View 1: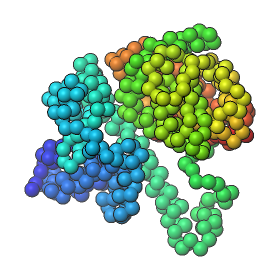
View 2 (view 1 turned 90 degrees about the vertical axis):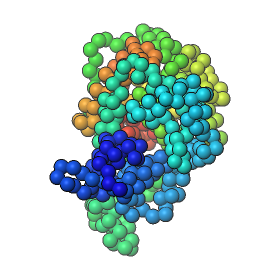
View 3 (view 1 turned 90 degrees about the horizontal axis):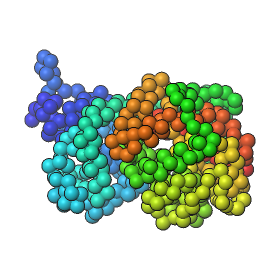
View 4 (view 1 turned 120 degrees about the vertical axis):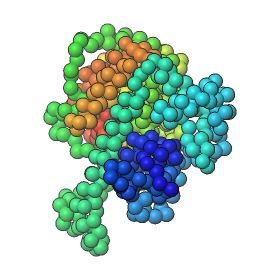
Length: 461
């Protein structure tokens, strides 16, 4: 059967933009052309369905490209299963609902759910050729309807997200290709007789053995000024000292009821992965005691407990603690005066709160006090990409779009303040220097999702 691009998109239940995007990534064979018309066939349709299936299993487009080109074999199935299990998707069909049942429990008519999905907001997932939903999707479909009611330019927002995603993935693939050409393949060509000599042959420095872990970006020298999150482009004075403490507490008490919802929407769900990465970077034994500072509604506490740790959450804002959904013990307290004994914690996490404390040096001093020698810290916060193109797109979204989303779903003034609060953060090199000075000499900075978030991880000396 022959299709024009619009017909192919409809047959595969994707947008025309998706077809063209797959084509630009060389995931589809070239169509036949008659003049200016491109013709596709069943091979293209089957390829698109396979790509969508692999995406739902958790594979990136870079991995999918290797699968469809025959560069990955049966090991891919194990990889997909591991990703699905990590995301809690194993057994989805046993907990999922059909469209009509989901419409009943969510209170949203089936026709409106389908209308939302036609706008590009994917609510459910396909299982055995049928759209299935879970009770957890209820809040998402209601949020999508609210966005539509407020008249937000969903097409533009989704287009921006797709462009940013494409740019980040393209950058990652180019990095992988460079590594393959200049490192992996030359080493393979040596037949593995002397890996150290092979590494030196292709220009890699000989390094001391270290445990496996994520590749990290080299840190700038201490004292060097970075173009990361240190930019202080603030158009109006931000509160300082006690005024800042009162403002932060009031702000988070105000946005607490819809804090999780707005986070999921404005990060397109990426915040879940960032928190899971934060917990993984602790590398502590099961049963370790971990304090989660600025725990908010308990997202990190839940991830810590899922990983087998004993979590204790602490937050400055009582409103956030009242909205918390975790079984971990919770404490209302100031992170600059932690109510814990010296060296009482095996580890400590903090998510998106470094810019909200009154004094970072005091905070880092408290971390060093309560974490035992050999314990770990993992501190997550927002950042700005180093790449100028990504930085410009991120600034547009973070400073213009996020306040619109926050205003539609929660409190506009609060979500205008949050992008501006980036000005409180020192440069990454300054923060690394502060943490090293108080007793975390191994501290390093990881950039996540192209640099829109940063994660500081290290071990207490």
